[in-house]
Amino acid sequence: MLPFTERTPRVVAARHLTRRAGRDKAGRFLAEGAQAVREALAHGVVHELFVTETAAARNPDLLDRADSLGVLVSTVTDKAADGLSETVTPQGLVAVCDLVDRSLADALAARPPLVAVLVGVSDPGNAGTVTRVADAAGAGAVLFAGDTVDPHNGKCVRASTGSVFHLPLARSRDVSEVFSACRAAGLRLVAADGHASHDLDAAIDSGSLAVPTAWVFGSEAHGLDESVLSSVDDVVKVPLYGAAESLNLATAAAVCLYTSARAHR
Amino acid sequence: MLPFTERTPRVVAARHLTRRAGRDKAGRFLAEGAQAVREALAHGVVHELFVTETAAARNPDLLDRADSLGVLVSTVTDKAADGLSETVTPQGLVAVCDLVDRSLADALAARPPLVAVLVGVSDPGNAGTVTRVADAAGAGAVLFAGDTVDPHNGKCVRASTGSVFHLPLARSRDVSEVFSACRAAGLRLVAADGHASHDLDAAIDSGSLAVPTAWVFGSEAHGLDESVLSSVDDVVKVPLYGAAESLNLATAAAVCLYTSARAHR
Image: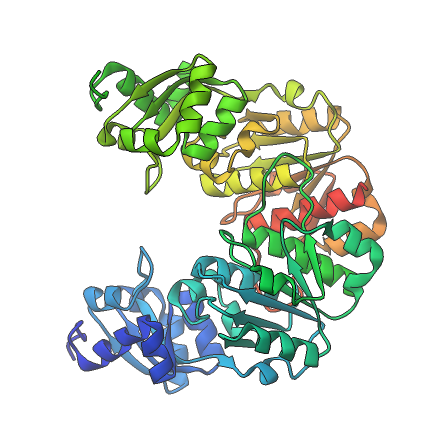
């Protein structure tokens, strides 16, 4: 059979999943590249796998795995694969998956002692990297609140290096709904903000990080709104001991989340 | 006077500074963008400032500052500015600066209790981000060892968001020379490696991080060579509590350096 082109109806349908509206309508998203596809297959969420001939030759294990799971595998042209890609260097391997997010109540049902909440984080690379860090630090959920990017955005999925499949994710435009759900799950809300009056050292010393904590992170460019800062239980800054003006979002989140993980031990 | 073009000799000479060999020969490098130029001016290392008309209109404060310091300011065409830029979106503002690195002995002369050592970190963005994190965590020096990128690389300077100007930097192709200099400065060498037999929690619990420490970081893709791992005093991994396979270099360095900063308090 000839490879599918960018005009083949199933490829056209899949291309709609590169947009949030298309994903929400279909209830599906695209996982791109060998690592993401491997994770997606492991989590049993793949409907169809599009692969170029080159990528098929390079990833025989993934194709075997897809085959054994009964996943439909379709060969596509390079151009068709490029059209399904959101990266600069497409790998020629894209899986159509069920959306992985769940309701807030469901994501917090296990009452995890550590959670990351993203508020207004519009950069998909940052959102994905923080999801990876939250996973590494043992967080039990990542919540995408307000105008935060969709966790199923291709760049977010890629930056998470598989972590979007590892831990419960939920999203809601309504920040206060997210905060209420956290409180109902027994979490103390602590926002990370560079202008806070006290820092992480003071928070450690006070013992306040020993309780179940939802860390609230804002966008790298704009931080958190006053309305968000005034509705959390505490606002803490990562101390800057040298002359650096700030940390980027992922490194600041890494310091905060690992400090909490340590405080919980 | 007409703006300089990409063929004006001074612009041609400056363009040689986009390459390491050209920088080492001239003893100068390029700092690009408003933030880097501001830091470079504050540190008194600027010889000449190239600016497009658009950038000049947007940054009157920087031009005043350059003027008051007696720095030569030259207007350039957009195309000339693009040729001096190493970024995707040139800001039209580039300063020719003295190299900021110093000898190993000089960089460690103050006997700082916390130092970052990069070994074989070829990605300039990673090297710059770790320099920023080291600065934020209060490290007293960053040492660029082995096949690590030049700290004056344009992408490294940019990723450091000014930190290459904030703390002493040194570089040497000879990793053992760097390690010897660290030991002579009273530093314990601790390598971060995902395959270490014990983790950061164990290191904290043992009290071993309370002493002056040089953290050794390798490349994100290849980690550290066996020869490096066998010549340090300790090898420690950042614990991965969830299902993530790894952290990226900058976030792992942030966790390590801030843990040491905390242990030193």
